[in-house]
Image (cartoon, rainbow, N blue to C red; front, side, top):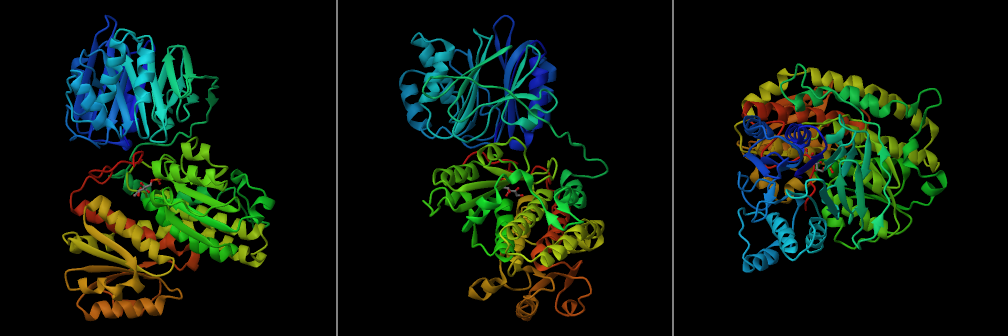
Length: 614
Ligand code: F6R
């Protein structure tokens, strides 16, 4: 959440900052701003509410000439998303400029003290205190560098700060406190680029210095000097990274989400490719870095994640327990991190995250690490904080996902979990070879099966035309379809702003059935599995009470349409892989409903693609 970008070099800073912010817009898009220092030491800040294109018009008309500056795209925590609350924030003298990601948890106390000292605040944000703290130390005789360090020491909470002073434009200060967001510094030719995450540096540099939590860097055109929180000089070595350049255009699609749903056959193929040997029917996951011996000691698996990633983890529990016989649970990272969970060196914690930057999931990993658990991450982002924190990883291989609503990363996580569960079962001799043969055959069919689903549009348009004005929807499923119900409801909520609730179909009678009448459509996940008859019974009970049913069923099912008002058919698929096929219709249903409701599908209100604050 919130994107930070900084530049120092010989090029036009304003243009580079704008360009960089555009690549960080997924982190927050309610307002943005840049601050540059001109050659005659003037600080100029330009801000605009709304998306970066608004800032772009402001910057173009003012075209400030400078070769150093900092920029920010905001996801508001304290203070409305308007111009005055946009970053950069400045001190009273307009000499210190700061951009900030995270929350200054003790800002109220700091602000009170600063107000008493006579500082004047111009925004409602927590972040502005940082500029005044720096100003205060400078007034006491400190250099900008020391003043920055002094200010940072006073901040409580996980955050990242980047700052510039108009009278010392030869360097930018930047720091990372905890895990509220990374700071990566790209090395150029007598220029440096600072960014919240590596994706913003893709076209600019492949030589990156990553700041660790607690580290502060003084960044000048040709040099980076890093100190840790105790003030000790840290030798850092920039890393050469391989950027995976992905086509970032929408092509023939109206939205990135539509494109990303359509890409799923390809991305699943990418997840399987090279990991499955069709001749020997073996699965290999080289990046997990856990030996057969280490895997044999695992007696418990905990999957942690948030939102869509948690839903994938919940489906993963079924896969892992069935295919490896090892007890597994999925848990919301924000609960796990504060729960003092029972974890030992024989526990394997699998963190799931498309971004690898979700603050709660990183904290959950750290908590598990302290207890000596083995840590694996399933992540879509190379060189993310999660991949660097984990002992091993399974790359999702979903490619760049720009739509804020996760689609292809969800499917690729499911496939990655299935591959991992099969691999684990095989390495620990729990699975018979014959199972692996069948399972590989089913995996290989998936891209084609998903291809069939995404080609179908009419059924979703028809259903959305009839249901998009509803204010409430219910999603139900059993077993491995329960997390799919949760995920379907989440997709509907986030992009169409329709209240939708996902639940286990078995839970219905314990209260929620009271909601059923003819104004509440129920989406029932009823593929042909061992819960099928139970699902039919539940659907009948809903029907008897006047509910409208939209069923997701297996091709060739002739019985279901006698109960359901609408049926969406999906290809037959083994139980453990069935979420991969049943979740795609729910993505399409949400997409077409949001389209009919005229919503901003790729950048839904109040959301951001990566959640770096609690
Ligand atoms: C919903 C969605 C979110 C994320 C959640 C965790 O479409 O994308 O629920 O799954 O914010 O993010 P990651 O996966 O980056 O840890």
